[in-house]
Amino acid sequence: MFFGTFTPKLDDKGRLTLPAKFRDALAGGLMVTKGQDRCLAVYPREEFLELARRASAASRTNPNARAFVRALAAGADEQRPDGQGRITLTADHRRYAELDKECVVVGSVDFLEIWDAQSWNEYIEENEEAYSQARDDSLDTIF
Image (cartoon, rainbow, N blue to C red; front, side, top):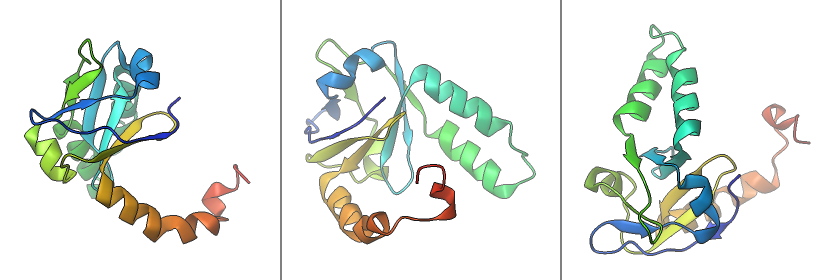
């Protein structure tokens, strides 16, 4: 499971050093894909394959399901961290998430998110009240 917030820097070659505490879980391979809210999602390879299987089981007659499967699969890039725990983010991924030098890696329980630092700070600021007031029916199993 992935928890915490980290602030690695993106180097000039588009490489990002993954937090050391996550490297063992990702050593067997990982998938980077476009996440929601203009971030990148990083899944352990097997977790991503399970997500892809579940997504592809949705009806292709549903336009939202088609769009989700297309975005998930077309945006996916398989990676294996190098000896220093770095992955290389594609130019397309860097553009999509508007990544510059300053990044934030956020644990999101079963995957990681990679954010541009400014975008992350804006997201947190905009959504803090919603988090504080969270009592939605979809959260009943938590509360």
